[in-house]
Structure formats: structure tokens, C-alpha cells
Length: 372
Ligand SMILES: Cc1ncc(COP(=O)(O)O)c(C=O)c1O
Image (cartoon, rainbow, N blue to C red):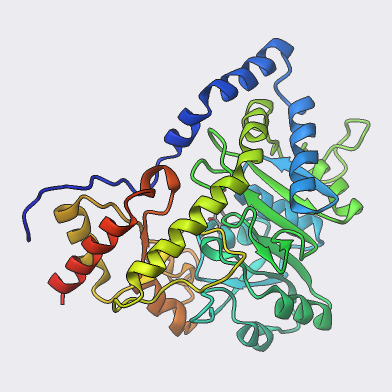
């Protein structure tokens, strides 16, 4: 161990700092909700849904209570039923698969491409079988999945397509935003996301009016217009206070994304000669995480924190197919299994990382050398 100078003291992320910067506007938005006295399904949720739909370039957005619920509702609204198979990746946050299982469907895990770290279209096509009903790709770390290939496969096989956009607000493929490629797309507004609220929240985006109508029913007990339950729904609504906060932050996310892209470019400049695997270069990426692949990852991580004061993250420590709940150890996903042991997320949130990329990179270089 080197000297514990903690010279940098860089946290991994800090959504509180972003909220603090816009605190006056957020306070005014919350006050507006209290003045009106309506807290559920009022003007703020309706306005946010319209504004986010316009931002994404889709016809409908339905606000829900979390990203996990957004996934489950999106799958059900796209016609997925208990017993159906949904092909997804294991290289994701476990909630992607939990949402599939929660609606009684079965997640089928396929490997990712080593370069994109997103669903490998060839593996996807090979996994399609008679019970396959849907494809659920994840735009991991804010890097768009290869949607051209995935959409073509979904169309060729007549499968539903739901995007997991929990990490990809604002990400683009040839000028088109993620969330506009499938039958529906799920977003999370967990506080650390590119667009986050001050608690839990989520949304589903779709161009299909019938899917949107079903989503509005599913989040509201399964009630029809007359307030009668016509299918099994839930209490899964985005609330007015969170919607009001999201309306403050939505107009600022393009600026946040530009700052993240600039930081990613700085990392690329500093890390280019180091023995690390860089995230794929993609013009439309939003860098929710900036994850490098590095040997001796856990030792490097410990040294970065203990010697240099740089906190980093691991997204994620194992593949979802390795979680006991899913117990798919018989499934071999070699790229996923390698990446989860190598990926290290460096600070990329502008509030904590701006002005520090050179120092973090030097600390990384020293740590890699010391851990060889
Ligand atoms: C890829 C992915 N899918 C789903 C979720 C679930 O979202 P939430 O935590 O809002 O339920 C998250 C984030 O938390 C995520 O990163």
C-alpha cells in the first residue's frame, strides 16, 4: 500500500450536487404542487409526459413508479404473457430480468458483443425458439445497443421489442433517440440516472396508442374509464412532485450529456496508451457510466480508493444469470463473465469529475502499475 494521502477525494457520483445547483427552481416546482394540492395524476405528470415524449421523438409517454415497473408494464402492454420467453442480456442491472420474471415470463440470457458490451445480434438470433415472444436489449452504460440489427431480427421473427433505456436518456443512433426503436421502451428516473428525480420514478415510451392506453390502465389498478378493474393492474404511478422535479431537470439534460461526452473524450485522451479496454466510441453515447476493462480490477479499485481517494463503481459484479434467483449457471456467457470481472466505472458525473480527469487517470496509471 502506498501513502494514504487521499489527495483527490473524488466520490463516484453525487446526485445531491446536481439538485443543489438547481435547488431554487426545484423548490418552486414543489411549491407549485403543494399550492395546487393535487399529488397524484395531475397537471405535472401530464405535462412531463408530453415534454418527455417530445424530447424522445415518440407519440406517448406514460409516467410510472420506477424503471422496474416500467419494464414489466411495457412487456405486458406489448402482449407478453406468463410462460412467454423474453430474450435479454445478463450483462445488465438485475432489475431487467426481475421485471421479466415478475410478470411470469422467462428471461433467456444471451451474451453481449465484446466491443459494444450490448446484446450480440448473432447470439440473439441463435437463441430464438418457439416460446420466444419478445426481445429486451439494454443500452448499457448509456451506449446504444445495435438497434438496426436487433429491429431487423424482431421484424423477421415477428417478436415484440422493448428497449431498456434506464441508462440511456438522450442517447442517439444516427440522430434518433433510444426509446423510439421498439414497441415500447422503459426509463428509470432513479436519482443517479442521466435524468433522475428525488426518489423513485420511471416512464414507458411508445408510438402505439393502444399500448399507451393499456399502460395507463396497468399503472392505475387495471381500471377502465368508469373506474372498474378490467384487468390486473397495480398502483404504479409517477407522482406529481417527482414529475415537477423532472420538468425542471429535463431541459438541462442535453447540457449534462455534452459535459459527460467531453469528460469521456478527456478519458480517452489520457487512457489511450494504458493497458485498459475503453468503452466503445459511439457518437450517440451519453456515458451514464464510463467503464474501463482492467486486469486485477479489484486490487486496482482498492488502491484507487485507499491511496488516491478516487471512488469507483462496479456495474455489475456478476452476470444476472449468476444470481441465485436465476441460477442459469448451465448457460455459458463467456464475454459477460469476463467483462463483469474486469469492468471498473470511473467517475464521469460532471458534478464530481470535471477538472479531475487528468488526476484520476494518473492515479489509475499508478494503481495499475502497483497491482501488476
Ligand atoms: C438497466 C436497468 N434496468 C432497470 C433498472 C431499474 O430501474 P429502477 O431502479 O428505477 O426500478 C435500472 C436501474 O436502476 C437499470 O440500470
